[in-house]
Amino acid sequence: MFIDQARIRIQAGRGGAGCLSFRREKHVPRGGPDGGDGGHGGSVYFVADSSLNTLVDFQFNQSYKAQNGRPGAGRLCSGPSGDDLQIAVPLGTAVYDADTRELIGELKADEQVLLAAQGGKRGLGNARYKSSINRSPKKTTPGTEGESRNLYLELRLLADVGLVGLPNSGKSTLIRTVTNARPKTAPYPFTTLKPSLGVVSLDLGRSYTMADIPGLIEGASQGVGLGIRFLKHLQHTRLLFHLVDIAETVSLDQIADSIQIIEKELGEFDEELLARDRWLVLNKLDLLQPEEEGIVEELIQTLDWKGNWFAISALNGMGCKRLVGRAMVWLEENPYSVKISEDLEFEILELWTLIAVRRIAGLSRLAVL
Ligand SMILES: Nc1nc2c(ncn2[C@@H]2O[C@H](COP(=O)(O)OP(=O)(O)OP(=O)(O)O)[C@@H](O)[C@H]2O)c(=O)[nH]1
Ligand SMILES: [Mg+2]
Image (cartoon, rainbow, N blue to C red; front, side, top):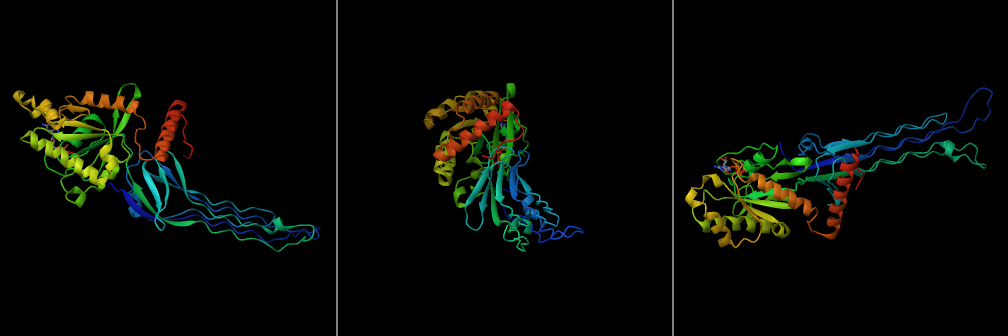
């Protein structure tokens, strides 16, 4: 089941109390204070896990708690610290404080770690307070409480290429043909009800990810059909493929209208998404009769389309290799073209550098961004 939002409560562990104790042993008069410190409380972290792509687990378990630190003991024994709790989430998960709505952080690289609630500090035992003027201190400190927070998690898939288009235009068929993803395809609208991610693998280990989302229809921004809420999954993409069924619609005007419907809905959702690089992918070429094939060039002229365009058959694979190959080259040449803000641009640059370093060095773990 694909779930892209969740509300949970997290609680970090309390610090263990310091111990009040004096050394009492035969033949050791006035042995002095020997109360040990408590242990630190465990913290709660989120860890990005590339094998996950849904927040469904949080539907069943909404409360997460790290271990408390143990109290200190006599003979200067420190209490053990509580274990940290690591919660695995899919790449592209943003973690918000549900009460203040503040963004705590976003997990964008595999194994990236985000501290969400700091464990409590340990308490100090009375041995700590021994001094020249107080040789038998009775003072200890209790551990402090761990942070607790109500969180809102939101998943926005991390993909290089996003597919948009009307229902039935062949988005899921394309992702099935060119990636390892297997979403359902069928000759009726709204076959796809949840986004899916696939990996396009080319030669020499070159690869990129592609996201398929449910189809959009006119009025989606007003909630018609499945609405536009799935468009948020395209916000991290760098390139959009706009799929158009050129076999079903009877006239060029109808095809042009269908393209404008998608542009309008994209713009209603996010102007920046509309301005993103978008390639027109004219699909179902196999259904055109030989005498109809001129329609493709005619359509591009009618639309006065200035960007890249491709005519393919997602079903039999015609033109798909060229399309995904050109996209690979484009992605390599435009590694961080998403210009939302300078900060984000910098963040993406940093992310790509880290990924490259990790690939080269074969490091098993990425540092916290
Ligand atoms: N002949 C032919 N049929 C195709 C082609 N691409 C897709 N189809 C068919 O068109 C129908 C719709 O394809 P889907 O891939 O489910 O379309 P979609 O865009 O994912 O649709 P939604 O999930 O409803 O948004 C299916 O019956 C496909 O087999 C193509 O290139 N040629
Ligand atoms: Mg589909």
